[in-house]
Image (tube, rainbow, N blue to C red; front, side):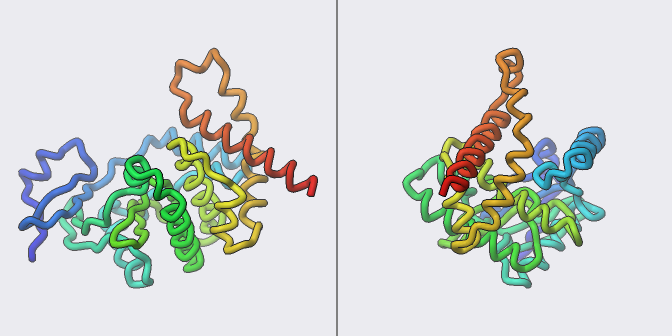
Length: 254
């Protein structure tokens, strides 16, 4: 089956970097070349990371070269390694076509919150397996993780993470996963979920709590003077910081 996308279809989705499409009745997803992110924003985040040294503030590096070729190639390499990712069906000049990997966890948990326990545990196990292969996702939020046929899949591999950066980004992946659960109002248990990720250990919990403690100045942004600015992300972060500090205090008492 040919999966080449007509130029008129691409033009009709000019403002959509990713869109769903049907080819001979089969649902696929089309991802177009990503526009470069604001260089000043990337520079600011890099500066914050250099000043703080906090692994949670590390800036995503972006794609290695052309975003279409980079991400399609990375998906193909991960699939060869046994990672559940969308299958690349076609590479075009400014886009690539991939298989449907199922609904995102964000949508799934919004519609079926009773499945949260099993779905979240499965996703953490899959994230750990990805990390054990020496890889990091770079944006492991529940909007970038899907479920199809009972298997956790990862999507949106846009960042070229290599070498010494892999370790910090793996911790950041765990943080982003917990942060996205908090942001969706699912009240994640840091100790319990880190324990699932570590298969009963506590190394990640300690690292994550220490890193979150280093971000405690974020509380200064949660003032009533700044409240009109749209503080959902800041408040989610502060709740995680508060949980980490409470957890650390309780652990120190035992």
